[in-house]
Image 1 (cartoon, helix red, strand yellow):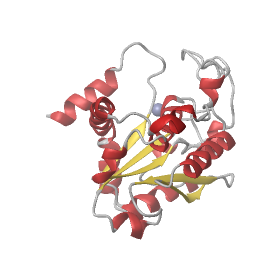
Image 2 (image 1 turned 45 degrees about the horizontal axis):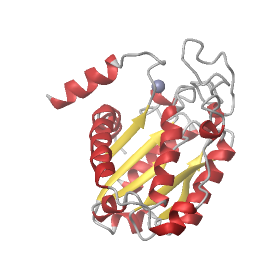
Image 3 (image 1 turned 135 degrees about the vertical axis):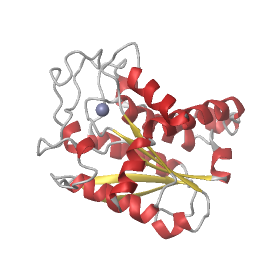
Image 4 (image 1 turned 30 degrees about the vertical axis):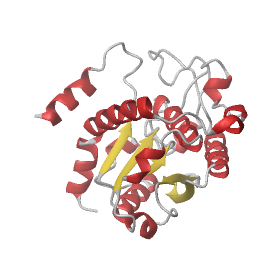
Length: 243
Ligand SMILES: [Zn+2]
């Protein structure tokens, strides 16, 4: 992957997020109801924040277990891994909209490929939890129409090592989760969001491999704006990209 590819990946993230969220909202309005009484009565697993009144955030093992549960519940969801963290945690990837999870199977569909990444800064937990929520929604059959034209590639937890270093002090100015959150940097104290060119970290090299092999048209990198009421940087980026 060239440096320009990395730049495009980062520069497009906010604008792409806005586009996909708009598409998600539109699709949600058109979403079909759950498929019959059996589906409606099923006890779907909760994410850790849902189970703790949003006071705690999911740990790595919980994220992986939730992804496996969704893959077990839906033949539409395929799981694989695409590399490792510095501490050796496999980086999980859910693939939806293709017959399997390999790059060949994804590219063979000819569909638009959208990569969604959460938790590059592991104190910014919303993207991670929202990605799990999305996988559960897909497992329920609520997003079926999307996959006529799209393949989703979803990793909720990119900075998995940083995610496990939970402390209430990691983002002291952030409004929750009050049970603590992971740290910004990875286990080597390197910021993965500053390593898309040098590729010093195992995580960034794994990501570069994923982007090269799956060649997504759109990549969405989910952050949080310190719990602030405004989102000036996101707004600015989206505005700039529209021009
Ligand atoms: Zn961030």
